Amino acid sequence: ALILLSCWWGQSDSFVLMLILFLLVSIIKRKYIISGILASLMVFTKLQVIFYMPYLVAYWFYLGFVQKRMVPFMKQIISFLVSSIVLYYLFMPYNDYFWLFKFVKKLVEEYPYYTVNAFNIFFAANKNWFKTPSLITVVNMTLLFLTYILFVVMLKRFNSKIVPEKFFVLGGAITGLVSFSLMTGMHERYLIYGWIFIVIVHAIENSDSITWWSFSILFSYILFLNIAVVFAHSLENSFFVPYNFSNSLASLIGLVSTVTVVYKCMSKQEELCHKTS
Image (cartoon, rainbow, N blue to C red; front, side):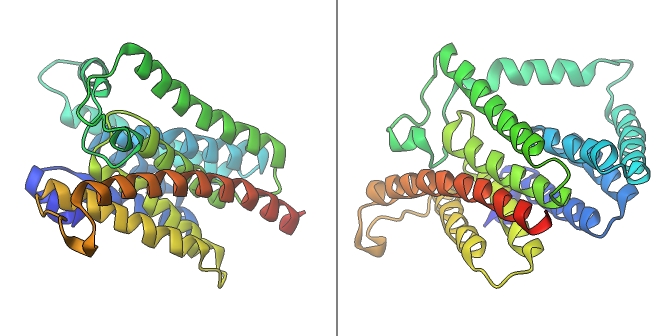
């Protein structure tokens, strides 16, 4: 459904999803030069991934300065910077050296001030496609900032007792779900980013637990409902519940599940700390 939607609207989400998967695989496989290049490709493909870049940068510095693994740290930093410079000039309009800054400024001025077609807290409150006051934008940025503060507090608390790759994907899962569920400017397909980090958490745990897999299936279904509405596939009379009720129910389930995942991520840090101490 995501691939069909991306093709329909000419969006890059399915391609970005592939880059995220490749990035996580390259990190786990310790292909550090490739991971740096993939990170720059992600940024220049879709600015949405900027939400997750603080976790990646923190992972780099955690690797280099906390775990004292300077060679992997330098490989990723240098490959990211070099490939970013190349991409910046490849995409640059004629002699417009500040093109990216102008683009980001324009996006910030226009984009976050409307709720859009996502099954999140605004849909549950019947406020989709609602012009939001400037205060809501401040709340959006504050909420995003708080997720990063939570990450830093967890990082400082557990110091070097945790595998940094796991910490990175847990942070990505929290931000992906919180941003989709509670922020404006979220389209139906943006839940895919939180979903993919949950899948990776399950994959790298190497356990028989189905908790994270169950969360991935749940959010997969909510994502499908979002995309189905955009494709105008009416859900009326499906599952013997009215259309609006089923969508509102999906919004509420997503919100409750997001809170549960955040709690699960926090408790997982305690478990990982005890395992490695």
